[in-house]
Structure formats: C-alpha cells, structure tokens
Image (cartoon, rainbow, N blue to C red; front, side, top):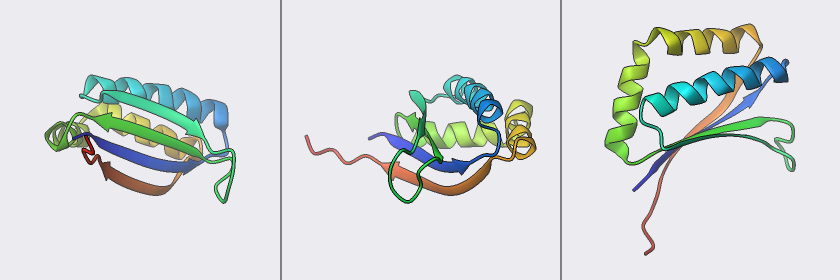
Length: 101
C-alpha cells in the first residue's frame, strides 16, 4: 500500500517557490519517492495555494526517506529557501492507500 504525503502551501514568490519545489522533487526522488507532484488549487477555499504530494511505495520506504531527510544538508537548504521566499506550510496530511482490489 502506498503512502502519500500531501502538504498545502502559500507563497509570496511563486517563481522562486516553484524552483525550490523542483529541488525538493529531485531530493525526494533520490530518497525513494515513486512520484512527486506540485499542483495549484483552482477552486474552493484554498484557491491559489499549492499542494505538493510525494508518493512512497509503503510505510517502510516513507520512514527511510524521512530518516534520511532529517540529517541531510540539501534538505535543510530546501527548507531554508522556503523560509527565504515566504513559502508557508498550511497543512500536512499523510495518506495510506486502501486496497479495494
């Protein structure tokens, strides 16, 4: 069963935040993500905000990626850039797939 981490963001500098999201995608793919996507919300309460989603094969893969991120200097740079460009985390959800075969 896959594990998907979904984060919702606001930012004052969309181009810079998008460039940083590219670096984040490269980082998470290197650390075991199956897919990383950035989406903009176009309807509803969160219109204009951005959603980043990382998909991992299972809980073990997700845990391994999180553990490796904690001490990685490149990840710290990604987080620091988020602060610098005014990107603010609004919400984080962890979704575990359910096999409905």
